[in-house]
Image 1: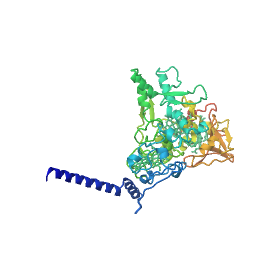
Image 2: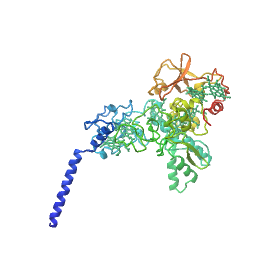
Image 3: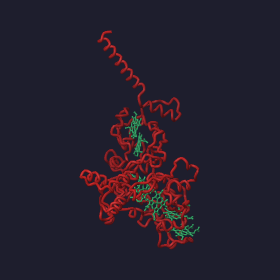
Image 4: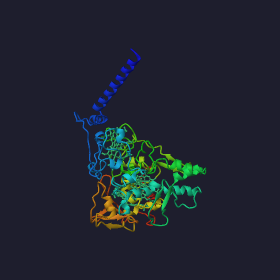
Length: 469
Ligand code: HEC
Ligand code: HEC
Ligand code: HEC
Ligand code: HEC
Ligand code: HEC
Ligand code: HEC
Ligand code: HEC
């Protein structure tokens, strides 16, 4: 064969192959692969492959995402697929079935603080969702970013003060830049500057304080704060931002839902594609009770007594004692049988809208909020309207239905606990996780031997300790 001929043959062959590939691709588009896998996983025979288009009522624009993501769980009853679709939260391109194009400008976690204002804070048309509302308490995006769980302001200020880097323990820095429009008292900062930015500037100017740099590197990046990524290991797996609490992760970090595109053998995924307000203590403990921070060594020391797969035989209470509380800590019965969110108010977990200087200023729940003291019953309020702020918020819990006329407990700062109520003269508490009802014993009128002036939990734990050491 002459040289020219072989080139022509070669080119023709290449053309033929390319044409065949196009035909093959058209006959086997990527989306069909995911639908096939989905039907296989669901053991559904002869299911029809088809392009699925959703036109969410809030945007009116077609989205083809669920053609591949067929089977994905509806994110929550408050965000139904028909109304929200996917793009309002995730971004991306709706009118293509090419994965790379569809995922262009995608936000994997819309609630991460880098994008939360655009996704959770406003709808597509810029209307107010979880921000920009009439009342401070409705603006979750601002609240959460100012909360201690996001800023870590107290720990940063305390450390810098202890090591002589600032003159008072009043917070100056946080884990990110943050501002507040108001302060309830002069102890509360109006704004915080990012400590990460400070360290970067210090290093550019050649003025790094080695102790401070070590603290920031080993504490603030170890995966305990809302705006940092989680450590990728059992127990610690979680998302960032709002999803750190509202999107549940199992301790093994594996997906158990029906979307075939999400690899079930890979770690680092939530349990299912769902947001919830019924948050179990396991979720809080992806950050809490995971170890201790050693000031001396300037590092976070993980617990070495955790074994995710070997404790299944224990009862719920024993397992919780073993697995979820720092060894050596003391707890009374309710701290083991109730959920964290049964005691800690929405103001404590999401912040009340202010920049808190330390834990003391943020925590409001007390043992006496529910138990009263030996000389006083719990302070109480009567629900006159389901629109009252705390009743309205609790109403989002799937297990609680607000009851006008109920007498409920209230913290000294004035936050109501609608799930701690008195009916027919008897106090009870409904658990927000599963709706279980516990009779609530009062210290008031009992033979409890407490000193009514000493109401901090440590004073109670001296006599009321359920831990097994
Ligand atoms: C052609 C099929 C296809 C289409 C169309 C598609 N996806 Fe995906 N998507 C996948 C696959 C497969 C994955 C798994 C990760 C990967 O391979 O990139 C994925 C992963 C994701 C993830 C997780 C990303 C991550 O970093 O883990 C999100 C969020 C997502 N898709 C949202 C969307 C949205 C929103 C749309 C529509 C705008 C969409 N997808 C359209 C196939 C598709
Ligand atoms: C209300 C906002 C919201 C809506 C609407 C929404 N998602 Fe999500 N999605 C989230 C959040 C939050 C996560 C958790 C991110 C994480 O774990 O980092 C998530 C996670 C995902 C993931 C990754 C799961 C994993 O473990 O890899 C995929 C894929 C996904 N969404 C696809 C979709 C699709 C498809 C739709 C439309 C049917 C949709 N989402 C609608 C908020 C939303
Ligand atoms: C540290 C955990 C945590 C984080 C982070 C968090 N939440 Fe919450 N959120 C909760 C808990 C717990 C409740 C339930 C409160 C109750 O039952 O009283 C709740 C309740 C809610 C409710 C229902 C009550 C209402 O007023 O509508 C909404 C909406 C909400 N959160 C949105 C958000 C948004 C948006 C973000 C991120 C900007 C966020 N949350 C971050 C823990 C958290
Ligand atoms: C992303 C990690 C993370 C998650 C998830 C998390 N927290 Fe926290 N939490 C923190 C950090 C960090 C602090 C601040 C500690 C400090 O400054 O010393 C904190 C502080 C607190 C405080 C005391 C200060 C305050 O703001 O009230 C309470 C109470 C609390 N968390 C309860 C909860 C509950 C209940 C949940 C689950 C609904 C939860 N946390 C989930 C990281 C987290
Ligand atoms: C039975 C009610 C109850 C339950 C359940 C409960 N707490 Fe608390 N928590 C309290 C009280 C009361 C305080 C205030 C401590 C005091 O009075 O000394 C507190 C204090 C805290 C603090 C601040 C402590 C400090 O270092 O200053 C954090 C953080 C916290 N709780 C997290 C959690 C987490 C996470 C869970 C779930 C694993 C949880 N709590 C479960 C009642 C409870
Ligand atoms: C949000 C309400 C609430 C708070 C706050 C609370 N408890 Fe309880 N407590 C309960 C409930 C409900 C029970 C019943 C639990 C059960 O039956 O498992 C209970 C049970 C107890 C008991 C067992 C009484 C008996 O039957 O022998 C003791 C002791 C106790 N709590 C002490 C405390 C201490 C100490 C604190 C503060 C750290 C505290 N409680 C905070 C609701 C609360
Ligand atoms: C000096 C020991 C002591 C201290 C301190 C103490 N208690 Fe008690 N408490 C008791 C005894 C004894 C009882 C009666 C036990 C019984 O009847 O089984 C009791 C009973 C109770 C009961 C249950 C009442 C009932 O009807 O079952 C509650 C609730 C309670 N205490 C709460 C508290 C709280 C909250 C504190 C801290 C502010 C506290 N106690 C501090 C010794 C103590």
